[in-house]
Image 1: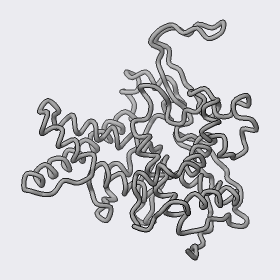
Image 2: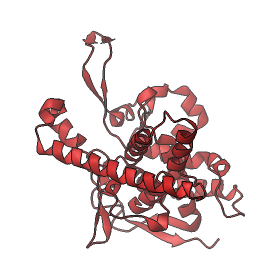
Image 3: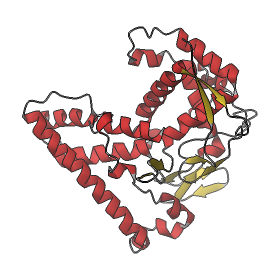
Length: 328
């Protein structure tokens, strides 16, 4: 799952064909230090953090990512000037914007691309192990898809309902379209219920821009706040029997009854996740393709899902699933 998502991101954002995916891309071994900084709050003070080895590591990661993206951008600009056809990648769209609006510079493109890649990957630790030939760590979108498959394997009635929806869609041409993904409302409900139980970002950080009164407590302006979607998503007066997997919580009618901030897996407001729509398209497209080709079931002796958190949720011991090819 990790490799699948990373190939898609490099193709869709950077324009690198999936078959040419570079295992040495700095985006595959970027290390996010947020967990250490949350565990040791004094590291949230930038001058103190800048004195630590973690700071040097973070700055090196940022430099590597900037240099890598700059090299790809310069190579792509040269290709386009030499008559290469445009690709359906975010980088090509940005290059087109910069051609029409010179104030949108190459540095702007690099900053936007690296922000989007980092936001959609949202990794705690992910790198390619050359000897074991696999990625270490867990990427947030890949984890959400894996957990969704686990719950579909555990709840066969839900998986069958997903398949009924899939059978109602005309896939005769063999190519998935945006309109098709919009018809997969129940599959998206299953993804949302998984995100409710195990949001990709279990902690959100914000700074108050003004004094805020909550009940009898006044939170002063400039206060660092940590918000836990995991806790919000398990409030019983909003989600009865909160530990139960129930995609019907996200039917159109039930969504209308809830406060819009009752479900915040991608945060909310102007600082919400820049890549959340991209993430939904990824998850819906990949899960649809996989489920139309394979029936998913649990592996005897591996039925339990044990989840722990760093920056993203992880499955202790992995997720073991049996995939059986569908006859049609």
